[in-house]
Amino acid sequence: PFLIADIKDLMTLRNLVNAGQSFYKKYFKLMSDIDLSDVANWDPIGRNSRTPFVGVFDGNNKTISNLKANGGKWQGLFGFVYAAGHPNVDFAKYSDVYAEGKFIPSANIKAHDYFAVIKNLTISGAEVKSSGEFAGALAGQLVYAHVSNITVRASSVVADTFAGGVAGDLEGSVVREATVDAESSVGCATYNAGGIVGGIGYEQATYGTRYTAVINVRNEATVGGAKSVAWFHVNGRHV
Image 1 (tube, rainbow, N blue to C red):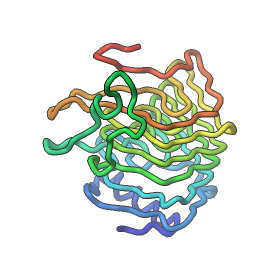
Image 2 (cartoon, rainbow, N blue to C red):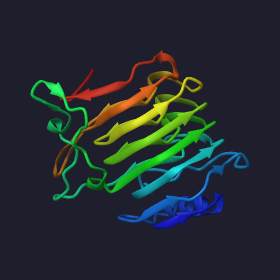
Image 3 (cartoon, one colour):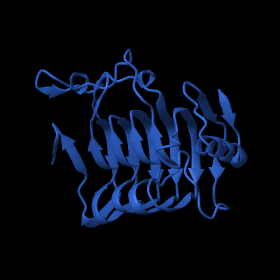
């Protein structure tokens, strides 16, 4: 794997991604805790839909602290995380999480089926603000991504719409084993705020439907906003 030892390495990854470099099937591993206190305004890894993050980022059970990100669309440690599908890749399906009239506790969804993976990371003391949509302590928006073992502590996330403690919005993605603590808060100026995620939907893609799943998560954060309820897209309808 590519080893990230300090803030300089993290910034190098960010700069390469935002310059348009793809890390498809590449693996990054965080080797130490990183304090972003000296960064006045973090430019997210994967600034927009033209330069998304794709690859595997293993936080290695380390902590990134004192993130401050304030801007427009897609704010967080990561901004836009996206990995296009492949005809031979088996993404999450309805039958993976629900069968015979009940939910499957373990859920048959595997991270190696995804090309955008973020795992094993704690984010502490983050302040994330978006003047538009999609803000999260971890990521603004996740599309065709798998995220697991994420903890958010003492963090604040605010957006005009789509704000979540972990991610602002999920499309065809999975978030599992995630916790947002009671010292954290999430809010929206208009609507779509959620302790873990602000919005959930599925993608009808070229290779079939990419379902979204949120599994084994715990939210203790304060959630507020004009309409502080997550947005869900089910069978083509908003509920």
